[in-house]
Image (cartoon, rainbow, N blue to C red; front, side, top):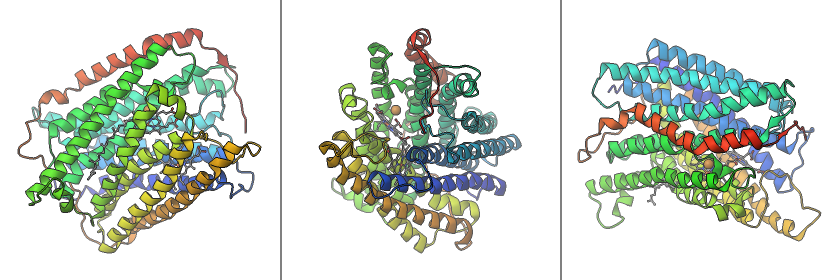
Length: 546
Ligand code: HAS
Ligand code: HEM
Ligand code: CU
């Protein structure tokens, strides 16, 4: 394993991805701030900007663009760090992928800004956007596939040179994440290419709404694990090194990733529990599988506690919780991802509530759900990505994380947590009182219940404002780390496996078996209901409500 800095070209590649990601974060956060103020009744949008236009920009730029670009940059940096300089093929694929994704993002964003695609990030039919919105999204997906091909070839070349050895853990995880992504995006590619594009060009009049939503959620759920797995890469492999400990178990980490490849896809119906036209049996089956996909997260929680405790005890901690004191609380590279882990405890618990049939009737389409994913993706994942940026950006630019920037990072993390506690806490609570998500300011004719929601929506705005300050802080830090911090070297931390851990069975690297099993589960969970939907679900013409 090489410990030096990345090859300069590989560094540029990762940096380009991260830069686009942060630009999207900035633009998306402006929309978020405005939304929070509109919903509290303190702001009316100027210049004919619509609330849903803003919400579409927010969802697309943050959930789709910020995440995907940051992730691909990070995965390439991880591959290069653990398997050596990228091969010419991998490098070329990565750059072609980058440009396809960037052009696609630009087209999609322009369409949203022109108010020709106010369909939200889930682009549910029968809302109908300009065909260019869907074409832009297609370019993003195709670009990510080209990038994926580069990663797979890099991995295959390493495997060939090192026959019989398990691949470096970080590159195994990068490949697993990309396999998950490719299987998942097939669903969205099918609906966009065969349903949305012909329909939005007017080649066909009607669209099978339920089929398009089902294909969307076939993709939309694994999408959330595509966000989560890179955060898990940091937790399993990078955090142990930062805290001066060891990885608890290489096999357990790999097994968790394999379980995500198996169980994260055939579960999309848990977003459609209240959708008519799907037989309860198939919803039930997919919800059982949803509970299976909770297992690898519980395994992860276990492994992290074990890593923290073992490393603390090796440093002399005693008592039940003495190890907590041995953690490096003042190192933002640890502190930011750690706060992400902590937030994932209520975030994940909320997910389990969502997935429970009866409780889903209460929370579906309320602000509770919005609260859930601002904890999971917008805090657990986002704070971990910030935590990665503190060392990855200076590592790539040949600079250092100074004590001042480290301290600012700690303050940034605290601001994020306070802002999110207020915003997401208010969302969860008012959601239980029935306040709907995806709704601009309204008092429903001064209905007493709607008036009760208002004070919570004001708390959401206060939280949103604090979050926006935190956004400005992270941008200041990242830009500093990219262009202004003192020259030097910053380590790309990669943990070693604890000597007491079991040897890794090679079976875990047998992708044929895992991809095969994943396909079997998908076929079982989706074939019958999809045939039923194709045969029986009605089609609809398009609508433009904005
Ligand atoms: Fe979710 C809706 C169910 C996880 C994101 N989810 C959403 C949407 C998004 C989203 C974006 O079943 C909305 C989509 C839309 O626009 O409509 N979700 C789940 C379940 C999980 C889950 C069962 N979601 C996530 C993650 C996301 C995410 C992760 C993004 C990254 N979700 C749902 C359902 C809906 C839904 C329904 C539909 C709702 C509806 O009706 O519309 C599980 O994967 C969660 C498992 C996680 C855990 C937590 C493990 C804890 C760990 C931390 C350990 C901490 C340590 C530190 C070690 C069980 C690993 C502690 C140290 C100390 C010292 C204390
Ligand atoms: C929705 C605020 C950061 C992802 C919303 C809504 C508000 C909001 C008020 C919902 C409104 C509604 O349903 O009417 C903010 C603020 C942020 C922030 C103030 C920080 C400055 C993030 C981040 C992510 C994110 C970092 C993801 C990485 C989403 C998504 C939606 C959403 C996916 C749902 C869009 C939809 O329903 O179509 N946000 N947010 N947000 N936010 Fe955020
Ligand atoms: Cu889901």
